[in-house]
Length: 279
Image (tube, rainbow, N blue to C red; front, side):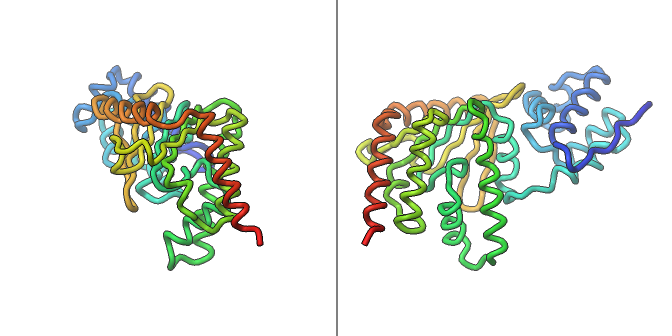
């Protein structure tokens, strides 16, 4: 039997490995559910591996090699997937984000990474990692700005962001950095590249007060939710859990200002920061 060739690390190894998994599974005559059952994972999880929206870990790879008779191909190539520019807790979410067709995100403390300017991102990393070297900060900023290239496409992914008002009021990096950062968000909104809403303090309590929330829709895979805490995070695909987070997001949107009112507020606060910077 002809074995698949090892992957080229310069390519998209996650997508290629997923395609090989689908091919090997179908050749073996197994359903996604049957392949995942011994690992106690769902058929939808196998589908996400095949679609390239979830990372294949070594324990899964060894199982696939044994069941699908692939001569150690999946285990050998897991190394290509382990290399990431992002922290371990976010790497898998970044990979899913890169192929998502729709992203809905509630941000309670910081402007979301996809919408950050260079100055704002640098201030966030300098404040959050006071002992990091300049080189480490540069690498983190570069990786964050690379993520924003997703928005170079005029339509995909659909990005809908709800910003808590505290983001507008928290002065990160100084007045000039904030003015630039908020104007950047407003510009993307005015260009209709992103949908932006602001959840004001007047909205009171809500379902997502405990932290940020990111919902992602990816091709040929179940919807995902990414939940992030202090230097930690996790992806979930359980339909019942995702449905609850979708409800929370919908209620946030209903409580927030309209996109038009939100852009006006963001621009007004940006102007206040710009005036503050003047002598």
